[in-house]
Every structure is written in structure tokens, then in C-alpha cells.
Image (cartoon, rainbow, N blue to C red; front, side, top):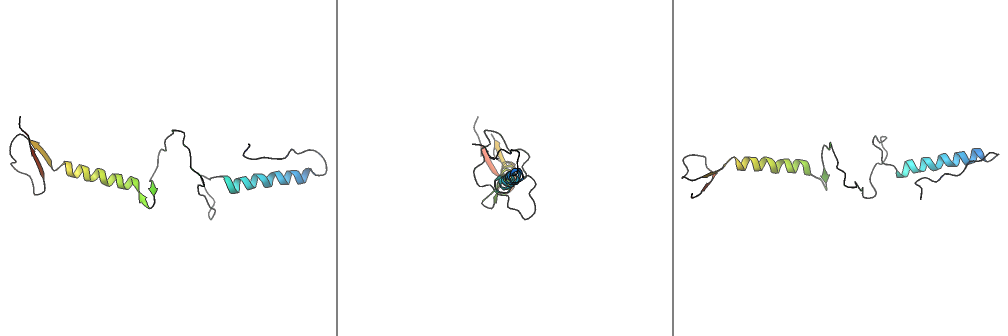
Length: 110
């Protein structure tokens, strides 16, 4: 089924009415079924169905927010914590000879 069904416009006295009806049908489709990249102020611009990306990626995304949680910021925090923790882990074959309180030391036998 076509996304927009328009009447065939023939010559004659009803042509103007048919043309106006076709324009009304186009307007209705744009108002009710199109997601705008640059939405007019005050107009709704929401998804009403799932968007199938057909295995394509979203690129250049500033943020991903789901249920009020910014996942990109959360992942950056996890990464920063990982880096912070790994900088305080030492693996050595000898006993600790320095470091700070809270550092993690692993002594391995050779």
C-alpha cells in the first residue's frame, strides 16, 4: 500500500476540488506521519513506532538517554573509574616497596 494515496486529477469542473483534496491528503500525511529533522517550534516530533535501522549504525550521537539515564555519560564514568583503579594496581614478583593507602598489590611467584 502506498504511503500517500492521491486521486487522479482529470479535466473538468471538479478539477480544483480534486486538486485541493490531493493537497489536503499530502498535508495530512506530513502533519501526522513524518518525523522532521528540523521540527517547527511547538509541533510534536515523537516516534510512535520502533525504528528499524536494518543493521545500520547511529553515528555522531551527542548522547543516548533512556529513562532519564544518559548512557554515554555513564559509560564515560565507568571508563574513568576503570582507569583510576588500574593505575593503583601493581603486579610484582617481590613484596610492595611503596605505593599509597588503597593501592592493590598482587604478588606472583615465578
